[in-house]
Length: 250
Image 1 (cartoon, rainbow, N blue to C red):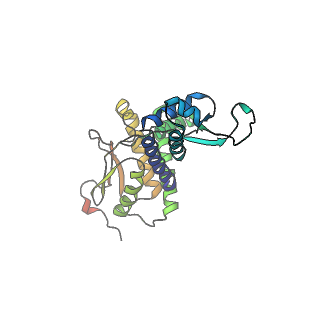
Image 2: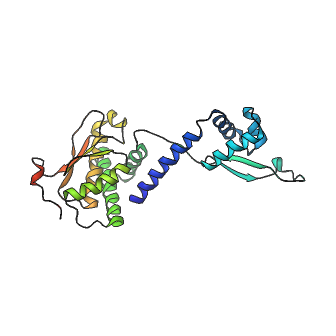
């Protein structure tokens, strides 16, 4: 999971960089023109589309290539070979830009629901299948994280430290409220959770509970504790009366 989340974090950074590149008006209009052109575009065509010089167009096009929004190759327009240097042409890549602040993971929720539909067992209803799918995915991700990090025995405090780092990459914005309590300031599934709280919050709890089990964190559980504008789940001690009753890590 750690490698997957690192990749997601890197992708989010790249998306922000791409949005920054597109903040310049001529560059953004040039990019839109190339996406709609339906063919590879020369520097002259790109320059003419926004009314700037070929030299300035080349500068903007290179920025778009560096950001991964365009790719370039050398080609003779129209397939006719002419004498002299063949022009460089530009075309859009398959890059998709998604930037959300705070972080959202709607694709994860959709994937879990699709998995639930495809694996629904006899005697299950849709909600039960969704909970099972979420718990299984969370457990799998926890097992992968444990295999990668090999943290040894994880009591409540060390376990939450491991969870804090990994859940931050998932977009939960964790905040340590005490040695054995972790508050999740952001719901990655908002605003869908507000539309179907029983289903989505239940899946979220099942996912985080499965993650704790897969990571083998002792003495901590995922509990429903809804707060306005925050995640509906918190991580806390199995014995919720007093933190100091929890065994300490050694």
